Amino acid sequence: MTEANEADRTDLALKAKHRAMWALGDYPSVATHVIPQLGAVLVDECGVRTGDRVLDVAAGTGNAAVPAALAGADVVASDLTPELLEIGRALAAERGAELEWREADAEALPFADGEFDIVMSCVGVMFAPHHQAAADELLRVCRTGGTVGLVSWTPEGFVGRMFATMKPYAPPPPPGAQPPPLWGDEEHVHELLGDRVADVVAQRRTVRVDHFAQPAEFREFFKACYGPTIAVYRSLEGDPDRAAALDDALDGLARDHLRDGAMDWEYLLLTAHRR
Image (tube, helix red, strand yellow):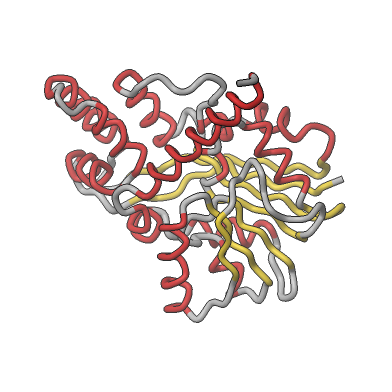
C-alpha cells in the first residue's frame, strides 16, 4: 500500500471518528439552550441580506444557518454529521425557515469555486482537524469580494480552558490534528487566510451563559450532551479514579467562572472579504 493510500485511510478513519463523536449526546441542547444567540450574532456581522447565497460550514443543527434563512438568504447548511442535519431540518421547519441541508466534510466541500456570497461558521469549522485545509476550502467556495465570517472559542476563554482541562485525560490526538481553540487566536487565523482576504475585522467578545447555577450542573450537562466531553469520559471507562479527577477539574473550572449563576464565554468574531 502506498503512503498516499495509507494517509487516505487514516483520514477517513479520523473523519468517521469525528462524525460519531458529534452524534453522541444531545448537541442540539447545547446550541439551543446554552449558546442560542451566537448564530444570529454571526449572521448580523456578516451582513446577510435577502438574495445572498450563503454557506454555513460545520453548521450542526443550524444555529447560524436558520437565522440566515429567516433573513431572506438562499442558505446551504453543511455538516459532517448527518444526525445533526436531520435535527436541524426539524428545527428549521418549526421556525418556518427554508434552506438546504448537505452532508459535507469542511476540508473537502462539495461546492464550486466562488459559489457563495457569504461563507460562515459558528463554532463549527474550528473542530475540523486540519486547519489549513479547512481554511482553504472556506476561501475557495467564496466569491471574490464575498464575506467570510467566523465565530470561534478562544484558547483563553472558558471553552478553550475546558478543552485544556480535558486534554490530560483524553487519548492523544491523531498526528497532524490541531487543537480547535487555535481558531480563536487572531494571529493563527491570519496565517490560515493569508493575503487572500482584505478588510479583516477581528473582535473578542463574550456570550453570557446562565444555564448553570452550580458547577456540577455544568459538568453533568456536558457529560450528557457534548460529544467531545462524552468521548473523553468514555475513554476513562474502567478508570474511575481518573474520571473522578476530571469531575473535580471541570467543577473547578466552572467554579472559577460562575458569578451569580452566570458565566461569560469568550469567542473571536472575525469577518473578512475574499480578494
